[in-house]
Length: 379
Image (cartoon, rainbow, N blue to C red; front, top):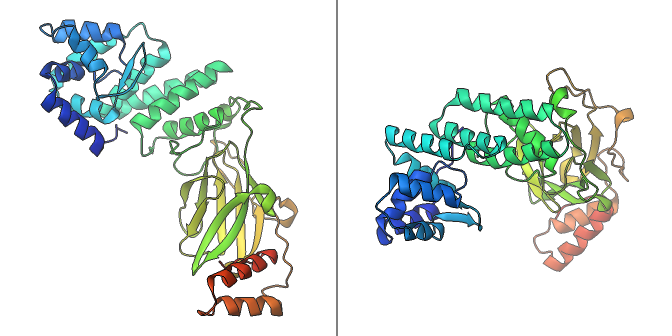
């Protein structure tokens, strides 16, 4: 786990400040690069301690410089790539001095804020042992807390993991925390990098707070469609499809889709289309809370699908052990108006017409609408 690399925009603004702004600004910013946020008093103390010859106006120039990604009346936050570049420009002893200064002058912060500060530093130093220790401390606090305190810890996780593990982590503690925070906050957007599908351990799952009524859990309809020769999993409004999948958080959310390989997490919302490559007659869908469904398509090119609940069962340690699909356990069912693998004369005629290169686009749309009425999609 480590910070992400600076992007082109961050490199550009850093080069601009180094070239066109007073050199004291970069010197002062470098002293403060290890702090997650910078308060006026921290800024003043850093100038007096490390850049004593600089005038007080340098503080104002830095406060309103393009190095700052966000500011308020009480604090500023540097662009992450800017902070990483400035910190890496320091010699080891110099960076150690800045870190000790940051620790000393932020000791009045809350325990959660100090933990965020420390985890960022350990990730920059790539100290995996201390990172794991810090993540376990957050898990311990979540286990001991409840209510609003659990939500505060979840917000801490969201802020911290997006910095120290932007591409995910093989660390179990980081995966559990990402899952927990997303489910607790009802925020399962692209920031979540949960790794391989897994259920939360029971001791952590029972600490999940209930989402308020103002944050309802989502439900999406599923359709298997053909886009040329490609197979597409299409997410539509739940009331527009026979097959529905309940989700543990509002949209957008994360859904793991696997066919003939390990699968991939996708950020899904209404209208999302996921290409299944290569086409498959079997898909396993896993939600962020570990619930699994099997989707079987006997003839995907003609849209006949059979979606069944896989009946997840939790093993000790939070692993998912799905039971064999069973008709009696089905929660998502698709009714076919045809026999096994057969098509009515009308459908066969429409399919032949849509395969004809001479068929005009308006007519193709009419055919697609008519096929949809049969539960068959070839658009």
